[in-house]
Length: 227
Ligand SMILES: *Cc1c(COP(=O)(O)O)cnc(C)c1O
Image (cartoon, rainbow, N blue to C red; front, side):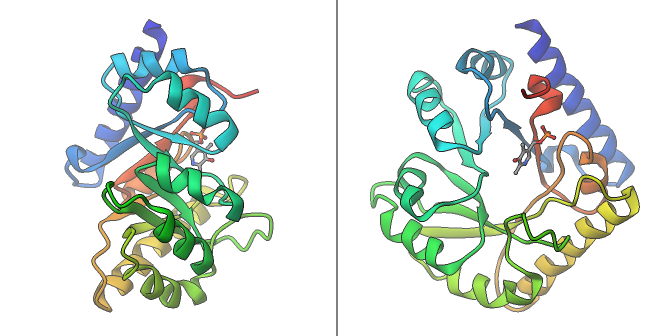
């Protein structure tokens, strides 16, 4: 699947160009390949091209792929909505969660994280576009939640994640990314040590990098459009 290798290469070039434009080091920006709904063979092709971190949204789709790719040294990231009855699978099978948005899920994930594994890396998802349909904690609740999550022994609070309304203007999207970066800076000034800003997708990764993203989550521009 040469086409996936070429698509990955193009995304890396975009990341590099955006980093240079922002006066940032391209190596500091991680690429998460979002492989939801895509078959295991496509992930294997991306892996062969050097990709190691993959993001999945749906457990029933992800778990069989994870089994099929167990021979590879993949770092799995859960980026979908969390349901209470699914936290055990997330806690046992993934290295990262980007979509944490409440303390109850945090406590469950921490308690269910197997003791033989390192703490589950977490980003708190923040809803900055006030879309009721979307996940994420409100900025007003963020500080309390972050201070509740940070001490949990099974979790390592690493940062924040957001998704701007895809229908909003470039200016609004950039403002949302900057707001997330500001929220992270405030939390760090308040004693936390967050090092990950998970923001930017196929359509807006340049804006996210301009605002400080160091983990972009790209699906369509690597694997093609989804059904
Ligand atoms: C699907 C998805 C992405 C990737 O979006 P693309 O536009 O396909 O790059 C990133 N983050 C989350 C949370 C997603 O659900």
